[in-house]
Image (cartoon, rainbow over all chains, first blue to last red):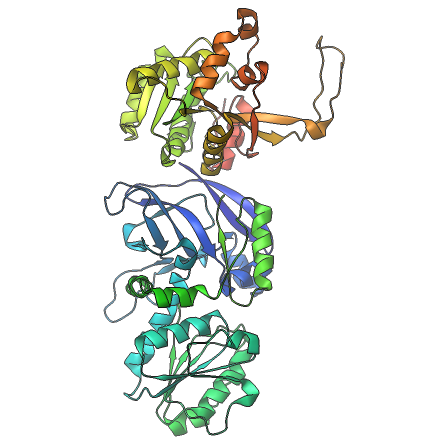
Length: 337
Length: 239
């Protein structure tokens, strides 16, 4: 069947690729709602180095998506089922290695077409049913799963004390990490440090929030997550190292295009552990979908959504990416192409 | 009920490639009509999709359905007629045989077999427009200037391009409305019908416009066929 794939050919230039998509043994899904990730925006604007862009483009963007099952001959899903799409395609099994880090794993919308398509043919394993979650909120499942994966990895690496967890950053990733910590470590005191008072005000469920220049000198944290990314990585890691207690663990999630120098002297002196974390796998998608059944968590995740007008043309794709530059957190839209 | 109707009664004489009707020619790895049918079947709102096939090619079509595992209970065959409208009314006859009397809100979405690039969005917009307004036509704004000539020698008129559109398919209708209008047409009026929307227009019923896609092309000529092959990245077919 002929599929329309809306590919980013060059920064801010989208063209349709027509492809006879093979649907044998796959579940056919119609994307319904999508959410823009910072990684999509970086590709769209061309804020990646030219070598990477020339290697990865043309490519359809978007990996945060939920849709409706059109047909499934495997019998796993029924027509009309609401599903979240998992963008990680695991490589060969390797004991002890998570599917999102394995050699041979693929990530749709990073070197492979993402979900900006008329329909998507997915392996049943790459879909998670979310029958009771509104489409708009269901698009948050991917980012929430990334946060749950990061919390799990820190939890496994860290010593047993969980009294205070620090989160540096005030964007969508920081928000998701705060939600995940709140759900998985409910007794911990959560402290969020950011640069934007308006954005910090959305973290109403955490114990304390500080602007970077108002952090009390005596603040001590057991473990921390760095979610600043970009130019903010350096300052965030430096401040975390300053405030973290000995043998604490730092989860690194912020993406930076630059090499970031870090204070290794204090890392050694304090005996710190740094854990890099990115993406997620099916286990975390299932956990995210399960947690999102709780109305309070679902509503919390929904507070950072800005729903833009539906996308019905290529011009509308450009419009939602422009909108996203001016929204503080997540831009979500209905996909009608 | 909502019915799809794929019109494939043609003989393909304009292609000059082969004696096989154009809807059966391969596009990438499958016949054109299979691509079209697959897309119609993915639209879950269709209760049944009829294929109006030239009687000489019915057996071939049945073989294709088997080969491509499309013997879905929603897929039905109907004999093609002398022209486009005959095929549509043959399909409506088959609907009445299979599902009984046509109800007031029954809809038919008619589509050319040789337009395999139709999208789910266009199909859904057609269904919605037919439900809400009774009749609709899929169009794209005309990009070339349309020139009118009565004698085929001199230009008679050049209409304003801003109000010109190119008609595509699907064309979708409330079945009762379409039948009633067609029954009232005189034989002379029926003789000049080139498409089904004209039945409504001639009887003064508004036909709503649905946005088509430039890519929803009709594969009619050798050039169209070559363009379609290039679009899907398939092998080039020489004539």
